[in-house]
Image 1 (cartoon, rainbow, N blue to C red):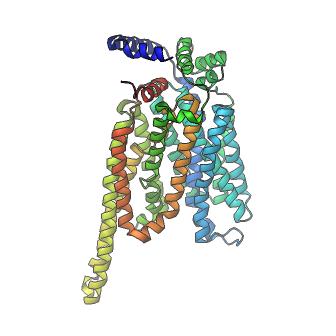
Image 2: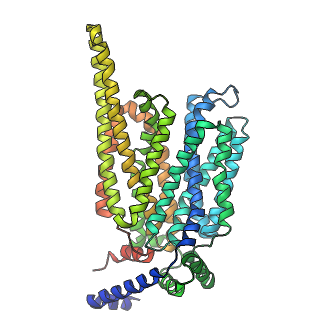
Image 3: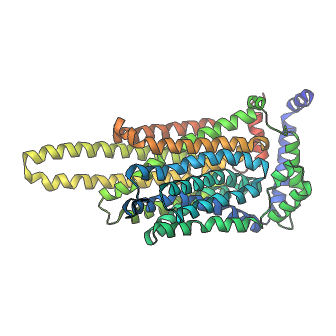
Length: 501
């Protein structure tokens, strides 16, 4: 084994370059013959999962005000209970991430997706039939659990099916469908009550369960199980009749042969394992510490201060902005590259949150000044009332800029990169740790946001988030690899090969 490595290292660089060039032209020849129709169909079936998960996240926004006003004392939520109704989803999702990491290796990607439709449907059914608070909480935890499994399995399923020309775009559809689901829940919530909204929310997971019956397992998982014939059939389904799928099958198999078959703790010393694990976990940490949940939490209040007639319509506008720019990110992901979008996104969020902090600081100063001047003279009254409204447009502007920035990079990209960087043997475990990190941080940010604002003021909180966005730009520039246009095997080889001299 050592001799092989030595030979490989002492071989002239020119030969390697020629080989790479030859591989690349062979790859291009193969990809030119590929038809993507059925690949898009399989992706659509899979992304009904993230759509369901978007409905789960968006459900609490229209449902909580109704459940707080409801006459039935068994269902009426206090302010604290409403906060838990929103937050228990993240606890369920963190558990779902761990469960997903285990089942995705045991029963495969396709069956895991079909399995996670069940807690979605059961969870919404319990909410529909709810007679007390506990039924509401259990329904939310179950839909959260399904969301956690989905947020792990769907990116893996898509990245293992898609080829490098479209993997970025298809992988970005995960986040796109999440934000479409959130917007769907907001819009539906304008017209339907909370029970009918739960009925509507159970439609996407039911469709996913049905559609996934007709879709293949991923070729990479089948090959890892030694099922060569089934893998070729799956590739033939995904790549169309003209592509010589034996070539791709052999290439994946070759990369798989060079890998250890199962994961052990000693693998954590392998740069091909600990480097992607570090990158994946830090990206999930930074995604939540951009303060996206804090901004969304504040959205309705900001619109109320800006004297919008109905703040719930304004939240639909916020969600629509997110959908539009996430769609833009999906379209340009394979052209611009992951790294460029992450850096652009980080800088945009850093600036907009710094402005947000300034807005809060000025509002407090204006508030103090206006109370002082109103004591001195009443003539200043109209002016004092005018300034906070003028300043609120600064808040609306910076919030729009922030959401645009987040949707272009840090919204979709961490999920995409997570699905690309892990070797096959640690893909389930590595992705589970990333999902667990993401949802634990989401829970921490959601539950401590109010305490943070009390401790270091609103301005201080947003300046802290702005500082964290500056850190994520530095982290991206130094550590996140560019995965655009590379096969999964090439990406993993890059992590392993960084130690070679």
